[in-house]
Picture (tube, rainbow, N blue to C red):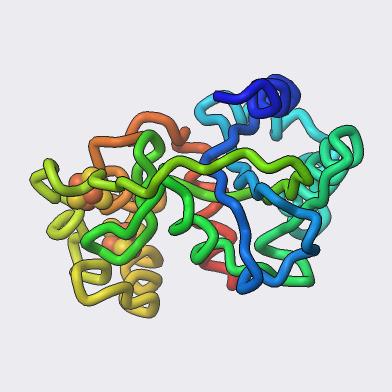
Amino acid sequence: MSNTLRTVQRILNKKSLDIVGYFNPDGSDNVYSKVRTILLIGPKEPYFWDLFKKSREYKDDKENPLDRWSKKTIEEIAIKLNARSFFPFAAPFQPFIDWAKKCSTMGSSPVRLLVHKEKGLFISFRGALGLNEYIESPNNSKDICTPCEKPCLTACPVNALNQDGYDVTRCKEFLNKPGGQECRNGCLVRRSCPYGQNLRLRDQSNFHMRAFLSD
Ligand code: SF4
Ligand code: SF4
């Protein structure tokens, strides 16, 4: 890991955030040309949730607390680093999924979701930092799923998420039934992945599921 990445990670640690991957953008990425390296930032679980729950945004009872906290926190870090900040939930919207696939740490899973080599199917992004420094990204050698028995393909009790993709309506219908309680504690497909399956707290999964169901 380069010295710059170590420095950034030290700053992120204070907010329970992680560099989950990085890549060198080209013309197709439509970002300011001085940006030579983009770091994707995700929660450092399981510590992240306790830190976020103490924040003003979590307690103020207004909309989108996690997005507001993420924007404030990552913008502050970007200023410290003389970097640019990007967010998956705020304009100008950036193609975070495409960006993730350019990182050596992430790839596509058999259920068509992103999978991360340590965080598995629970990979998520709170934002990204664009650095002017060029930090060469490692070659893409993603064989995360090749040696796996692929429990993700059959873990959904109602077949809403499999090799054919994600049937959101079917998933939501099940989540709203009494039998969906275990899924409300965390998607069984995501939890079936051997990578990162114990990192996300039940309380955090409940929070995301409530937001998903209220959409
Ligand atoms: S939350 Fe449950 S129903 Fe929805 S995709 Fe995941 S396992 Fe299937
Ligand atoms: S369960 Fe196995 S095949 Fe499925 S995403 Fe995780 S590592 Fe890949």
